[in-house]
Amino acid sequence: MSESRPHPHPPLMQAVNAVTLVLVLWANGAAGSGALSGESIGVVANRHASYFLPANYVFGIWSLIYLGLILFALYQVLPVARASRSLVALGWGWVANGALNVVWIVLFSFSMFVPAWIVMIGLLANLIWIHERIGFGTRDHSWWERLCVVWPFGLYLAWISVALISNTFQLVTYVGWDGFGIEGPVWAALMMMVATGLSTFMVLHRGNAWFPFVFAWAFVGLARRYGEIPLIANTAFGTSLVGLAVLAVVFFMRHRRGRFSAAT
Image (cartoon, one colour):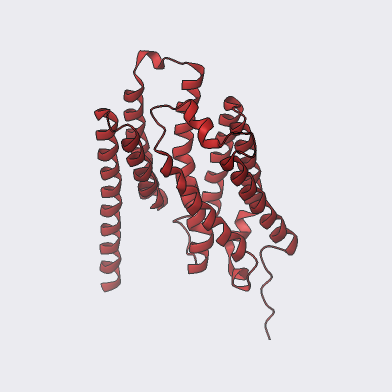
């Protein structure tokens, strides 16, 4: 009889991961309700609104992100996870991520925007590291791994990529930077174009299909908030369509190539 494969995460690691998730959810709830600093994090963000701050409903994407992270926390303790190479590669990455998330929430809630921005850069770097370690788009994963590890962190990375742009705009608005004399709506339009280029890269070279959807979600939210500014609204809809069109073309070509390879 062959020995059962050891679980990639020992009980201590499983417990630490679960506690990290609980702390992140608590901090997010406290910041959202205003219990942390006396004002909700939404009120703080809107006090220094920039031209890259989407409509409030857009931030509901955190619910989907946290749902994915809950699935991750549950998956890591199940017997089915014994075969997961992604969990082995992840190591303490999630714990570091959770710590950065909580620190950012606290700093931003208390309007400490400069250190919060620095921490968000660290959060993005952590997610890029996780994205590469778990082999998003470059490794064969089981269905469970995709659902509970690969997709949640891929979605998380896509959103934090948008959030860092938004936080950067919020920070320069707070400090009163004049943008080299370039008006805010122009900067917003330019950054949507740059972000669409990033989205295309992530789809083509990293296989992360979350990026076009998340970026389109955020950009349409920008159009909803600043619908009276044609440059922002038109660029938002245009770049959203471009990103989704690139994804559709890539999916079609890869599907067609797969069918051709199978046929031969």
